[in-house]
Length: 332
Length: 258
Image 1: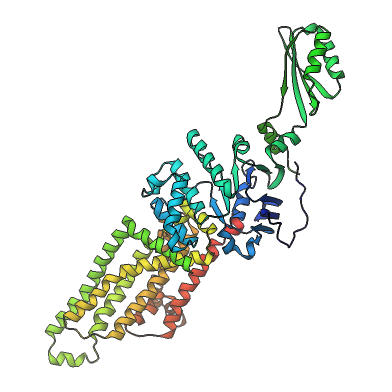
Image 2: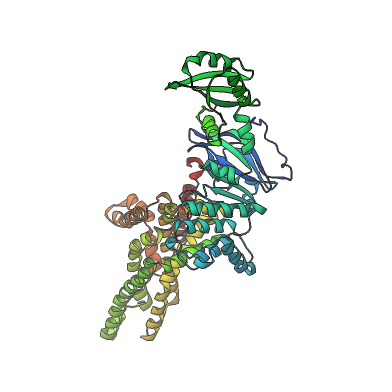
């Protein structure tokens, strides 16, 4: 659903079921406005997907949420704490996997996790158990003493996830966690993310739309530094595919006009487009309002009028098409 | 602060785990040994040849100042070549590996990062210098008179000179993602500071005073002579703080440049 921008920045913490609240966030780099007043919230335990073309502001938003840099204006609340008032404490609650999975390539897997555990103030007596657990979750036990630089991309991704999990942060921020992986690795990482999300709040960005409907509970589509749509994938599909398309093909081009008039006269039809005509076959595309599925009516009608109906099918807009439709509109 | 130390430990361990670190430890010990041996041999020769009359002219002669003073003075120049290799990876490597992005999101402040990086280099620098303590035993063993004040002042000066050069190197390393470029710029700047000493010797009056005051080497010389001057110490403390401050500002650039 299209988002209404909130105008006021509240000073009170968000409700307790809200894990992340972002209010009127803007980020400027010199004259470039990378984020333009965006607001959204993420509930506890939710998996939120960020979608958007390159330069939409996904990484900038994630960097603000992880404390890489502060916003130019606006506020971020995480777990009822004001981020920029108490950054160091709140950073303990966030695990981050940046897009290119930056890791110290000359360190061993275990050595890196110990370093992160020290930085994240994991109590000394728990460090060993903590590392063991994360190695196990991420399937790294066998490569624990390997040098990171010698690992495959898939394993490095897992190391990246493992370091984000050290200290059990309540929030995981994953920037394109499956990019550059082969199909088998992608499936494994997705599975892992779903498991991790069971007791955590996860924000991830992706280019792959099917990933969003597979993993995420909710989607935010960013474009040009603005939130252009947000909702569950179902909501997005329902809301944005306002128009149902029906494709009709008849086998007698002499009756083209008659068929055209019949279709046009149907209730709920917005417009009828005449498509190609070849070997006596004529195609039409109808746009109807979404609640009315006119296919049974059309087929009955054509049978009554003895028009040879060759094909009739519904063209529901896929998430892909919705996405393209949204991001190709210039943000206002 | 605790986290700065965690970072420092990781960094200095990385030196020991890399060939650069091992080669540096070896070369440093070797070169230091040579630089120590020369004044030591000269001193032993002198002490063997000196007649009682000659000794009379050497009133106030301190073997410690002669041997350790020359060692520190000459070895200070070697730091111009050592520091760029030590400091080049500090932040440049983190930048090129993009691990800096992760560091910024760990529970660390910018100050922790700069301080941790600085401490990491100092820690390795400490291990580099450690073998030179054996010279004290050697010096004692040949029966020379130990002037602890001169030796301590020499070490303090050497430490201050080293950390100052490292602070400058850290700053240069923070503005570049390329380690080689970082090393070359650091070397050029350190050479520039060294040249200031020459410039001061060919100019006169106020200018000579100005260049000499600006040159780290002019201040360092006092330490090698066993002189502890407040202005020399202040100079090095300021030098360190100044470049640490610049480094801090340089990593803050991400806030407005992305």
